[in-house]
Image 1: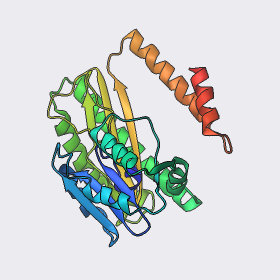
Image 2 (image 1 turned 90 degrees about the vertical axis):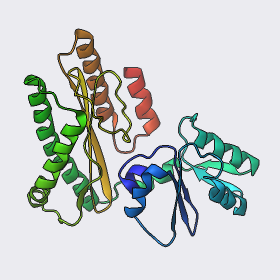
Image 3 (image 1 turned 90 degrees about the horizontal axis):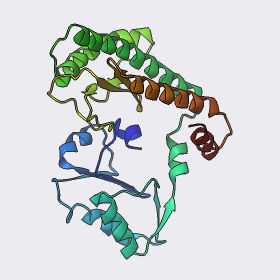
Amino acid sequence: VYNWIFGREIENSVLYFSKNKIIVILPDRYQYVSNLISHKSLTFQFFPKNDNDSKFKTLFAEFEKLKNKNIGIVVKENSESLTYRAINQELQKCSINKLDISKQIQLFISIKNSYTLEIVKNLGKIENDIFTYLISEVENTVDKNILMTHYELSQKMELFLKNQRDSFVKKYHLNSNNLDFNYSPIILSGNNISIKITAESPKTNINQNYIVLNISCCYEGLSIIAGRTLLINPSEIDKDTYKSLLSIHKKIIDEMEEGKMLSEVYKNVKDFS
């Protein structure tokens, strides 16, 4: 849902939807998000780091107003975060029933017509063009042993996106006012790589072993995110592991058929792997 609305995931935060209002509670480092979207029914609240006493007061007050004592939540694995525990405890204290609305949310944000599908396809093609250039830059940096930080390469890529934006618009017949890039390209390397979309390109030199690339672009409110993993001089174990991952990925694609339950897809892929 965060990716659909804001174009990126946001940690330690809450989205609350009621009939008449939406409350977004975020760490104060994400204050820029309030400039991305606005509406009379939308309320942003920001809190400083480690403030676990006051940040949910408005949200908990909304819980008290619930008449039917039911609230929809997106059920994933249980989280150990302070945010999750605080909200879960308050829901129990208010004797509120938690209803899983994961399927409804997925249906709401899913592609529903050929026009939307065409937009997503074009965004995918744009990101493929970006990766072609980005990977060539990474290969050049590695092959020539150029010392460059992740941040420097990310900034170089951001300039490339700015300069190439009009060519993307022309190539894929888009409206120039509606194409944008959600954040600076994320470039990470080494043995301690974060796969979270909230990661940032550090100001340390690119490590020539594992390199992870992440970019995101949006058009008319639709956002897509894509990543690539580069293995530099991989070991035999690295190669075998990557081949296994590719075979699992192919199996997932093969199993994704219209009308098939995702639980069946998951089971078949799990049995395969």
